[in-house]
Image (cartoon, rainbow, N blue to C red; front, side, top):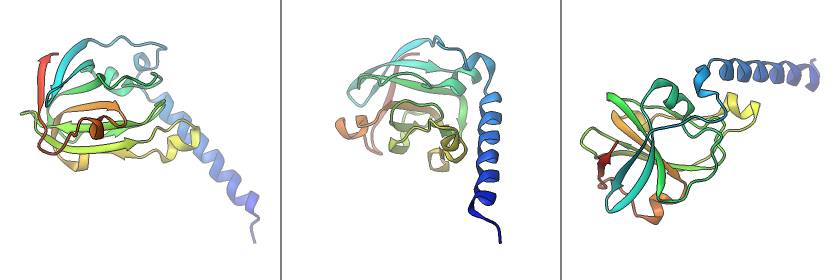
Length: 164
């Protein structure tokens, strides 16, 4: 009969290898210590936010990785060319997020609250991906966890693009 060590050591080695492969496959320019994102302004209902804009593949892959907590009047908006299922992965995040998916008309299609970050190599392997409930979206807004509750964002809330 196999010992606990004989079972756990190969599993741990596999987890580390998968984590390393995952990090190595992130686009190079998204791994830089600091990535500059264009800035814009949006509104969710009557709440105005200053947002970083992730519109290229590298910017979307990098997202808010390694950034510190944001105030409630800031966020990151992911802008897609067309409506699609948009998965969000919490790799290397430093704080939990509220994530809101919007269609091309600015209507909420899905809300995920208090999504936890994945920081360790083992968490990288098991880190969950939220795909917006599998619903089609054009925009995804990431805000500091608690934003949705604080501003009463609901399925009937509306996104207004002011400048992006």
